[in-house]
Length: 319
Image (tube, rainbow, N blue to C red; front, side, top):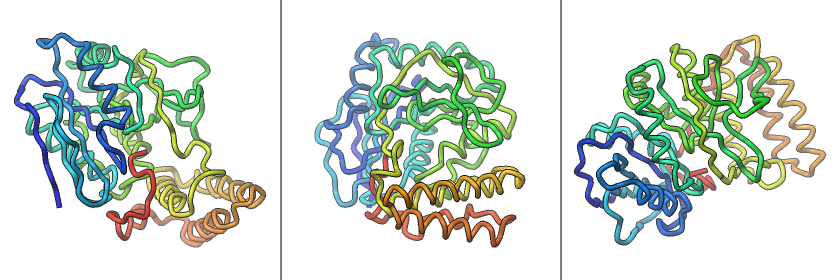
């Protein structure tokens, strides 16, 4: 079931379609929904080139109530995952002729000048089609969590705050990322194999693999990263989803030389989980180690797709 609610989406001059994915949260409770309204209000009406698309993954029927002008709401009626939400947004962006998608989680807090700054950055790089993504610096709990440099053994923190065009491969979380729609269409849309987890890793790998580039802006975002400390507070179901996405990404999009090092990391993780009193998570990790070790050259991307991607059993689907 898909329910849609429209509010004033008729401006063909829009540049950005901001997409907010909700899960078990009302429109008025979302930090992203509230802060983007404030950010839009800080732009002069004639200069506002942003529209907002809200995709609700909450199972059952949802009623967002009255919507501010320039917003569109769609309820999937089920947990369809991030990839489905973003692909729907990609379709909406094409209808509205918006060249850029801004991806936002429900709990991301936008600075009041965020949209104004982003619009300026997009204008600066609009003619350079090699630039396909603009990302902010994201903090969670006072710690910079995004972007990161991609190295052979994993992600590395920048020594200083990065800004400008990045020639080397980076990875950034979905929320706060502005992505060029034409680029996403050129790679077949958002990969449904990563229906919830590791979609951001996959997206930035595609940017690097196709010879495109990302720009790090001078904007800082606050974001609650629900899996930042997963070893102590995550459920078995949630961890299973993360592990499926992670293993699929590593075996599909990374060099085969990196797989042994990934297996070693999983071994260390399983030991740590066991010591921390998470035997179920440790056992799940050991089973994944065995699965990869038996077929080290096989891609797990297809297996990463949830057998029931609309299940209500995955927590924090918008995180």
